[in-house]
Image (cartoon, rainbow, N blue to C red):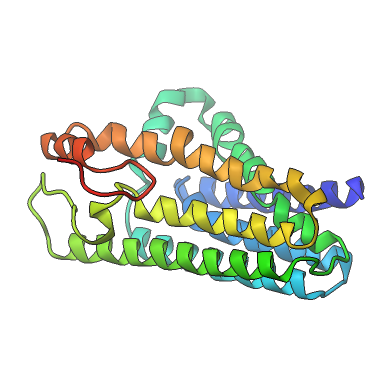
Length: 258
């Protein structure tokens, strides 16, 4: 069984390595942002092909990952199409200097490949094993929670897109719709979907508790690493955003603070 996990990891590493080659050809490491959602689809399908089993839990989680990943990658592709390299990768390119090729592979592509594998653990687990639903109620709870998270992320993204299309003043801050309850509805929705997938996996048996490393990892990344911290470090230079931060929850939705 360990060899099947390693084979799935190998496929993920190969996919990210090929993408690294494309990124160097384009001189644009931010192509990895578009690939992020697709990489999870690759992980899910790889495990499914290895097992050659198509039980209902496998079909459910694979469909959910496909919907989440394809929507996210399509959105990022359309957002970045025709634009220069994202400011984060451009800054690192300058910072790394002569070591840019090596650091780009290890610090960007290799790291994200490993994170993709870790986050995908519940999906890989369920797709590699011939499992059946043991607790239908937990399955239903997981699917409903995933739908809630998907709508929360999608609506939040759409509200942000409409805000940007309105060509707001430079220091304007989006604080309406879902953005009045959490400063990052898209990240909250994304984490919720992965916790929902973790719950769906638990519907096959509580012995799968260890696969919750997946939602734990994505939540940690969003809260502490590449999601909220990097974005808010940039946005906090705006006085209006600082005021928004004082009144609005960072992650979990909640009422506006006075």
